[in-house]
Length: 205
Length: 328
Image (cartoon, rainbow over all chains, first blue to last red; front, side, top):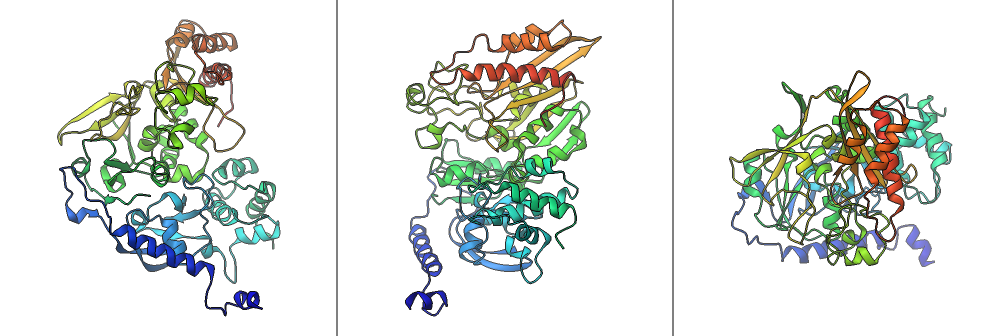
């Protein structure tokens, strides 16, 4: 019965909130030991961020305040503070493409962008392509069964959207080449390409 | 990731003022596709990160009287889309080879040239020289250098644009360490083989900064050819760029540069000598490829790379001369 309560969200406790809480504790500990630069050329304070600071991120059309350190990545800010958990932390260096988001319309890896450098830019996540009337790309993914475990899927959806925005008449070969920044360990590439081709040809309706 | 100070200079002078004179204290952030991953793994642990992307003079592609000037923080996809570079196919082919739209949008041309080696001993904390080369020599070195590998450095330089740009005679504008210092460094002289842990892969001092890439207009036929493992986003196993001056059907001058075979991009005088004074056909291209790898010194597990490099040289020459189509 406890499991059912958990699924219904009645237990008042879930894994994600727990993780978010422990992350905040870790950040607070680190803050106490923020580095003091030993070398002579001390920076002008106006140009430098040393500690925790509040910035505004424009995500999915709305302005959101987030508290970040210099080392906070865009992915950490959108997942753990804005609760947009579509983009996934898979590879620290971004090679998997699972953390792909649109920054000013271009596909970028949110896990290799610092949150601070994204202030003032327009960020769109996979969540902005969903909703009651989903964008043609996620709709084609559903129609073509273009996922297996689904962990890479949000990154693929955003990458396909970005690639087709730039190349609406792309050929299959161009799509295969253009999606090279995304990796699927299940190997469901054939269906992803099929979904992308369906969007090129005018959608599934 | 270790926490750090984050600085956003708006001018070149401000950027220089923020850089330390010691390696390791400051790092320059451009696209971040390499640096942020290295910082997460604590391979690179700067006290201050200087984001140079907000310096307006460092971005964009423009024409000068005798060449093309590319700002160091210009994203690779903007370089790829620039019509000013249509006559430098070697550069565009190298960017297309990177293929990931994320890396093309986020990565910058300056960062591409200054990225750190992919050597797996370095990336897993073994140090750039991996115990003065011992880890590589006695370990798994299938992706390591087959040239200039007798010293402690046995990694291959990871840049995919450098061979093309060196073949085309490009130079980089470097500023610092002092505020008013600037120099134009030929890219062929920009890379060096580090001898100890206090050196990096370029001639840059810690307080210097690459601001622009200059590609002279020399009317050369150029191409890049990469040998990759499958179609994935991995780095090439071997690559070559060729830039040829052809008149009357004969090669008057040639620059052949190999990538991913040595701790620096490698200019092959032997390949050039095999080509100059001859017309380009499958036989001369093949003999230039053979000449390029004749003096290779493979390690225990990478002898196969000599054959791949030979093929890359041959294909790059044939592509440059327009005798073959393919690649990207």
